[in-house]
Length: 151
Figure 1 (cartoon, rainbow, N blue to C red):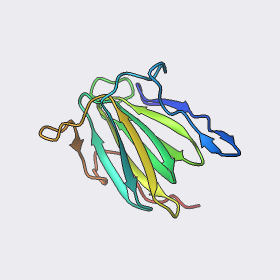
Figure 2 (figure 1 turned 120 degrees about the vertical axis):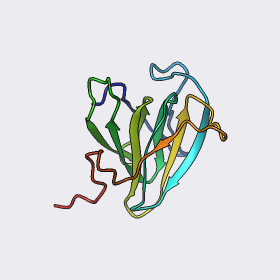
Figure 3 (figure 1 turned 135 degrees about the horizontal axis):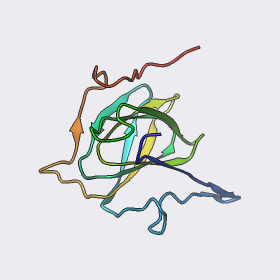
C-alpha cells in the first residue's frame, strides 16, 4: 500500500426495483471535504494518466464498466516513495479509492465497454490555474507498464 491511499469496500444493496450503493458520506472516516463531483469516461484500452495534484484529494469510484487504476508514490519524503499500486475497480469490484495529493495516478479502461468514473474531489477545479500536473503514460521514471499482462 502507498501511504495515504485508502480503499473502502462498497456495499451494493439490491432489491426487486434495482440497486443503491453509497459511495462517500460526510460522516465517513475517509471524508476530507467537498470541492466538486465529476464524471470521467475512459474507453476500453485507453490510458488516462499520469497526473497528480498538489492540494486536491481524489475519491475514485467506477460505477459502470471496469478500469485498472495505477498509482505511483513519487513524493520525495514519503515512506512508500517509489512504490506502485494496481487496482481493478468497477462493477465487478465496487470500491472507493482515495488518492492523496502528490501520488501519481491514472486509469485504463478494461473489458469491452467504457468505464464510468465518479470522482469526488476535495477542491473545486480551477480552470485558470488547475491543480493538475501531468506526465506521459510511458514516463521512464515511473516503473509501470500499462500493457495487458497475458498468461
